[in-house]
Length: 442
Image (tube, rainbow, N blue to C red):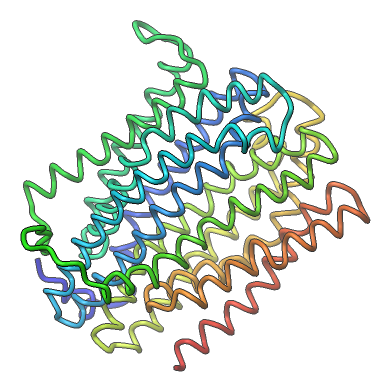
């Protein structure tokens, strides 16, 4: 397959053709997140709270798998753009082995550590019980998830976004269909409760991986991933992790942020923790489609950087920023106009809805500004600049948000956490713009 279209096709058409399949995939993924939480919330508020508390650990697995996949994606795209086929093949082979290793380590770690983790944030025996039921099943699929995401990033690196979209859609749709069947025991399916939600997630990941394997067999990738005579390449390993580690930390920071915010909100009531968890489910409708655009442009940035087409790199950044701004503007309007309806998808408790309405309207102030941070991080990763990308995320999720949220809760109460979000987004947007411009200038 010829990848030269990445540096020859008009930039606007190129960005749309690469990003649109991933945006569609991410929208369906967002729908899965909402549907999954919707059905879990039908079990009880405790079940939804359990899901919220498990989320940081679940995101740890996703962060490492996706983050390292970003490293694989960027390195392969760069070498293909530079016409270094053998190096691209080596990057793919090393990436596969490390992905499997990550899956094994994460499975063992998460299953062993989750009981201690849950007890850090709640003493409610029912919440802990349901959290463990969900966790033991969902973390057992960590190896499958790591291999699935490896293939996702490889397919994206060579420009085959439609294949990635089809595979993700099949996995998400499978999950959505199985959720009510396994949770509530519809028809001949067993009634599994929250364990059914976890099993549906795992089966969806298996379906997605099988689809990638079938397509790779029928229509082989333009990469030779062979382990015959395989030799460890320290330089290649360093290159993959130089991008992969900062990208993983970028994705891991939201988990650390939620963990820290849960600890702050726990001093007020468990309802605030629930609202934070619901917000994070809802915001996937914005940030996952935005991430779809980033997934689309990342290999374009890497390929054109490798081909020394920096003018196209700058155009790709500008166009993708415009698209993400449009998504975030829509999100702002929805959170301002329909907050009660959005929160009401997950609870019927008036107090919870009231707190959620306030949270969405305050947090929504920072959505548009966050566009700059989201696009800058993605473009920097495509350029192989993992460290400045990591700094953006550190400011956005931790260095500004957590101290501001903590201080404001001492002044205005729990709502201080919600105000911390928009203050962090606006401040980080300025920093992100500066770091991106400086990196491109170099």
